[in-house]
Image (cartoon, rainbow, N blue to C red; front, side, top):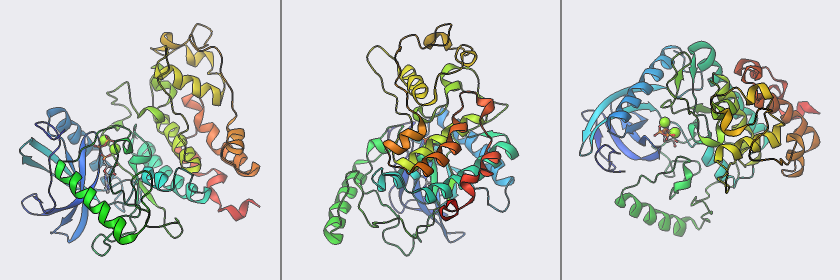
Length: 402
Ligand code: ATP
Ligand code: MG
Ligand code: MG
């Protein structure tokens, strides 16, 4: 991917925008870009520099993202809506072409790292509530104030507000991944240059030696055993796939596991697709597992498996919904039954939480009451972000339940 039209290879110390920004280290990557921690010499602070691939379609996507991020920033002068703040943008030319660069406020680890770091065990309901509140504040302002559908909400696109001062702290991350793995990003890809890989392997060996701390399975050095004391505020990032609700351009949106049923069956979509993804994230934070993990099974498509998983957990999709999408015929007969999957095992969400994840009956009940309406097959019936923010489950810390 480091070729003409692709990523721009960056070395630590590289200068951008006529010397204003100096690259420090790679923070992450996606299908469209690599993202670097950079020092802004003008404002004397650290920023995140998202360096887009250079081919025309990526530049187009960057301009689109800049447009949305500008509108978001204008609508929120106090920077309190839990969405990443756009600071600047410019073009940078390198051996692989002209790259749009988007300068964003520097944030911390993604929720995906948080979940992995915690060994996929779930992070505790009080923390889940905190994070849910931040995401809902973001969705409420995107949906109601701005008319924007994020359409790619998932744990790697929600970042914790960093509690680390990159200048003072040598670790520079709460849960530092020493060697990112391809599966760390659901979109795949492994955009590291050969030199970067060598450097990471060296750093990893050195750290293991110095710290004598265990390197966990995912390639993470465990610096902190507990999440206690980490203030879990977060912000929504990555508006590359977002759209104005009245100017939609793609039929297939969202990352597979977080995709709403109406997107799969092709019956049009609106803000409520983000509410579906939000519910998937909340479940994943609470349990450490994906809510829906569809697979390609012999003779079946991933879409069919996905719909079957949904119906096993949520009951049968109402016939009028199942049969009225542009792709309904691919999956359903005229009665609204799946054509190729006849037998569904059924699970109730609260039973799943108790039996598989050892939730107490009370926790399972209140969490299910919060989640279940968000997973309505009828998009119109899902609560809005504003309504969710009023939900009693989010209001009180745990003690108040008693
Ligand atoms: P995708 O393939 O999901 O569309 P993308 O190429 O559009 O990805 P982003 O999702 O915006 O890129 O960013 C990629 C990663 O870089 C994030 O998952 C995160 O780890 C890191 N990152 C992005 N923005 C910031 C930021 N403001 N502060 C710190 N890290 C960031
Ligand atoms: Mg992303
Ligand atoms: Mg993106």
